[in-house]
Each structure stands twice: as structure tokens, then as C-alpha cells.
Amino acid sequence: MKSRFDIRFVLAVLAAVALMGWFLAGMHWDEAWEVLKTAEWKWVAASAFLLFLEYPIRSWRWYYLVGEIDEEITFAELASATNIGAAFNTFVPLRGGDIIRIAVLARKRGLAFATVLSTTVVERLFDAVGILGALFVLLYFLPADIAAGETIGKFRGVGMALGAGGIVLLGMTVLLGTRGAQRAFLSMIKPLPKPMRIRVFDQFRALVAGLAAVGNPMRLIPALLTTALIWVNGYFGVLCAFWAFHLDVPNISALFINTAVILSVAIPQAPGFIGLFQVVLEEAMGLWGASTGQGEAMALALWALYFLPVTMVGVIDLLREGQGLGGFREDLFDDLEERAESGTPPK
View 1 (cartoon, rainbow, N blue to C red):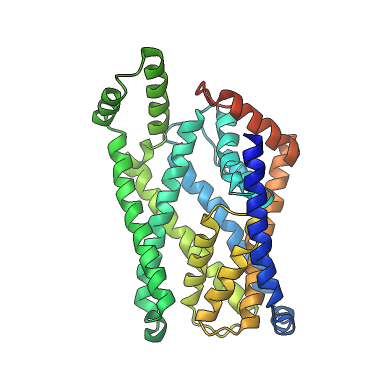
View 2 (tube, rainbow, N blue to C red):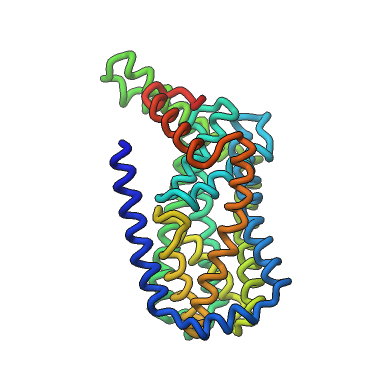
């Protein structure tokens, strides 16, 4: 298992180096520096604050999902796990921090790993629905000349597919929590030997337990509203970055850039999202009339604003756990590997 992880790490880093090398090789340093050195720091600080605020908001949304299965969970515990996961995404490839976040919370609260995992699956479905909502807003406000472009057409297709899929899967998660679904699953695994059947069904119930909040309107509706808040917050965070660097682009482009960011980091890739993030942001800025140097400057600035603050806070939260990055990761993955087959939660 270790060798496979190492191979994935090498491939992810090589891809990041290639993309980042391509980005830097064609970079217009003089123009980009002119943009960066004119920054108004009050707007830079406002942008950094708002973009960091996304993580507490996501923790708040997670609270509605996990609170259905653990009423004594605290926001502080969820925020700490979220920050630690974000920090690990800066240091390990393939969004490994997402697994760390789940394991940290499962260990703290004594919850089954599969149960916490399923709550994060619901989060991704909410994000897909959010992309669909952002797409409808964009299509309404987009200038006609940009809306007719080939790139926007592809973006529209991807957004519609993700959003529609998210809505369908959200409906399916509600059905999975019903007794009928449990009986159907039990019938499917009936041919298995009894000990194995019991273990498989226990895992299924642990997984379904994390979906319980979707069937509770008192938690589902606030979670959806919090998803909308994530997008509104991200829009103003990017808009403040535009103001900080005096970019003359339409305000609605901030929503497009924020959507491009979310899509670019959704793909498992190199540590810190190096390479793909910069390339996507440069291309996205160009669609809105920004010069090449402006797009490059914004790609570098937004990367720093998105990831550096939460990484520093995540490392602080991790140190409060009493371990460093390397030791914590090694202990955690060893613990998960030992307990994966038994279905018990991490220690």
C-alpha cells in the first residue's frame, strides 16, 4: 500500500511541476509585478479574511450534518478538524487532507469512520448543487458576447451536469436512509456467510447513519442555506481581490472566478494545488478581458490568499493535538490501515 501511495505522490508532483513550469515559463514578470506592487492592502486583507472565512462556514454546515448523529459535537471540534484537513492538503497530494479531516473527527468523537465519511459525501453533493445555482446566476448576468463563447459553453455543460447529478444523488441519499432500503440491501447480501453478512450490513448502517441529516428538514434546509452563504462569501472575497489590484473587470466575473477555483481544487492533485490552480485562474481571467500579466498576478495572489492563511491556522490546530505533521500522518494512516477491515472507528 505504501508503494502505491508513493507512486501516486510522484505522479501528482510531476504533473504539478509540469503545469507550474509551463505557467512560469510564459509568465510576463514585468507586467505581473506592476499589478502586484499597486495592491491596496486594506482590500488584500479583506479578501484574505473573507476567503479564510469559507472554512468556518463549511464547518458550520458540517455541524448540521454531524449533529444529527452526535448531538454533543461542538463547532470548535469541527473547525479544528477542517483546518487540519486543509493544512494537510497543502502538504500531501490527492486531497489527502480530506481523509485526515474525517479521521481526526472520528477519533475525537469515537464515531465510525464510514459514518463521518458519508457526511462529507453529502457536503460534496451540496457543493455540486451550489455550482448549479452559481451557473444560473452567471447565465443571467453574463454579457452576451462572453455568454456565447465556446469556453462558457463547456463550463455551462459541466456545471449543469454536476448540479443535476448532485440533486439526483441528494434524493437518493434520502432513500438510502429508509427501512425499505435497508431491507433491500440485506436481501442483496443474503447469500454471503453469516459473519461476513453481519459485518457488511454493519458497515452499510454506519455509512447510512451519516446521511440521516438529509432526511431531516430542520438540518437539510440550514445546510443548503449555508451552502449559499459559502458562495456569497467567496464572491465577495474574490471581488475584494479585484479591487485590491485595480482590475477593470465586471463584478459578476468574481463569481465565475470563484467557481473556477472550486472546480480546479475539486480534482485530486499535487500538494497545495500547485500548477493546475494557476493555469486555470490565468485562463479564466483572460475570458473577462484581463491582460496576460493581470491574469498571472491574480493567479499567484489568489493562491496565496486562499491557502496560506488556513494552512497556518491548520498547523497551529495540529500542534495543539500534540503532534507534528509527519508524525500525525504516519500514526493516523497506520491506525486506519489496522482498523479498516474490522470496521471500528480510529483510536
